[in-house]
Amino acid sequence: MKAAPFSRLRATFLCNVVCVTVLFSCDVSRPGDTLGLQSLGRWEWHGRIVADADPQLTIARLRIDTTHGGGDVALVRYDFNPAVGEGDEYSITLGLELGRVRDLTPGTPYTLGPPPARVPAHATVACLCPPLKPDSVRGTLLLATRGLRHLAGRVDATLYFTEWNDTSRHVTYSLHQRIDAIK
Image 1 (cartoon, one colour):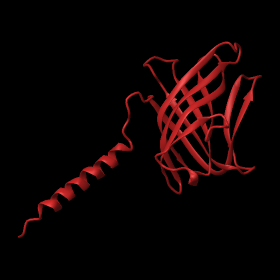
Image 2 (spheres, one colour; image 1 turned 45 degrees about the vertical axis):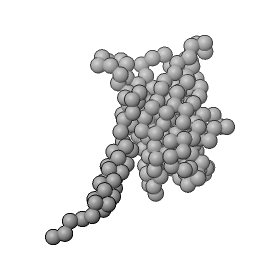
Image 3 (cartoon, one colour; image 1 turned 90 degrees about the vertical axis):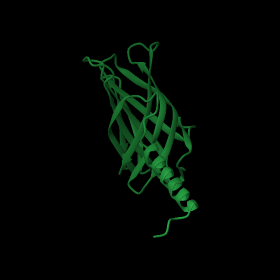
Image 4 (cartoon, helix red, strand yellow; image 1 turned 30 degrees about the vertical axis):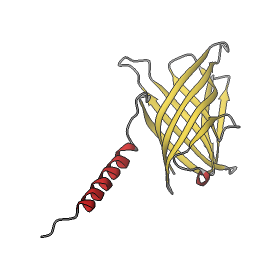
């Protein structure tokens, strides 16, 4: 039996370290991440995000409309329960107009926000709080992978809302989460 040369052992060890690092770095939580559970991740090819506001009922809704065509869109929802007690739970729904996903490069951060941004974004929040209407979303989207039926990445954003009954009161929510969307 002949021993392998030292350079081959070193190359094998390096390959193993790189593979393990890449494998585990995709899903690792980062310090400062928000502690939400993603409960919806829908991706459509030919759609657009529709933000409906009903001032009579003081609710805002996000949905995907695929009847009029459009580009790639994603609708994701995160559920949060910050404390042990009851009444502080909330859900954030985020709608992303991705354009053509094939044009997005994995590993490149894209700006989220109103239409001059590369990825226009809309958000709503459902909570046991005064009714909130959406103002804007500011932040970045980092696409990690884009497959035929799956998008994965990371969203780091601040969501701005105004109270329906008092426009001088503003509320912000932070969202620092992994994002997954499936067709």
